[in-house]
Image 1 (cartoon, rainbow, N blue to C red):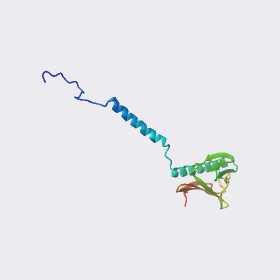
Image 2: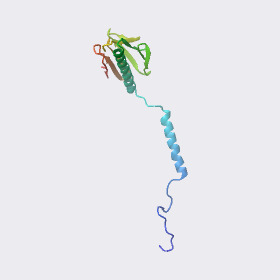
Image 3: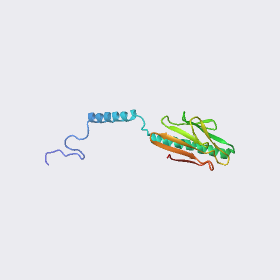
Image 4: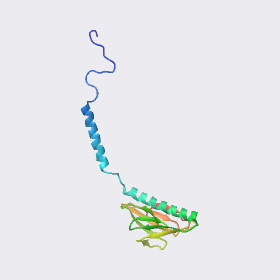
Length: 157
């Protein structure tokens, strides 16, 4: 229109964008939200704790079997259910989480309350046994076949 100054491209009549105060309020709210989430700590699941503990025990058992085969000697995996600590040939192994309980049944057939061992022979066979890992309502078993020494993790009956 005549008499009006030409509008520049990209501008709009009135206010556009956010004020500094609005941006600061959003940043403060985001900061408080993040602080609240971080202060709660990591999310933990008893089911995941039992699965992690069962897999750690299974890996230590597999390591004991491999070591027995490769070194051509007997190798013992031991577990102390009361302290939730494993050992491999007397050397400290894995410490299990405090909310996980374990019970071990060896070849003798009884549940062992103190330290117990599963021994692997140079041919890969073992003394056999079963470790029950529980956390909350989740129960897993780590089975060691006496003939082959194979280690499997399954749901406990």
